Length: 105
Image 1 (cartoon, rainbow, N blue to C red):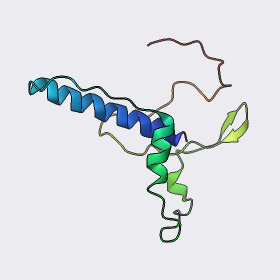
Image 2 (spheres, one colour):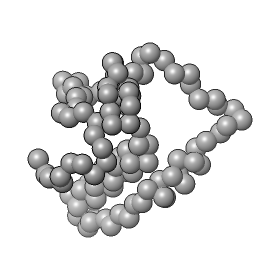
Image 3 (cartoon, rainbow, N blue to C red):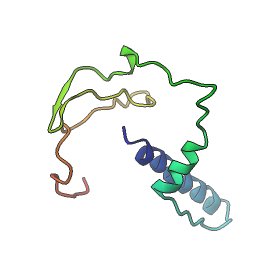
């Protein structure tokens, strides 16, 4: 799982929502600057290796089944959260990095 990508994406979404809230309240627009490196520093600050060990791997963490990838067999993790009525699914299997053409769809 790309923790830095996901966490930075969540922070970007929060920044957009905060800016929209301020714009609706006539407080102007916000400017947000985010980076993967800064997110790494933020997440590393939450570590407490002496007190809270990582939870053991559980079967419930697995999205189900083994997927064959260019790097060998892999398992997908379940989504971090569920949105009622909006199932998480993947349109395509894992592929070699850089093999898909960029597009907005």
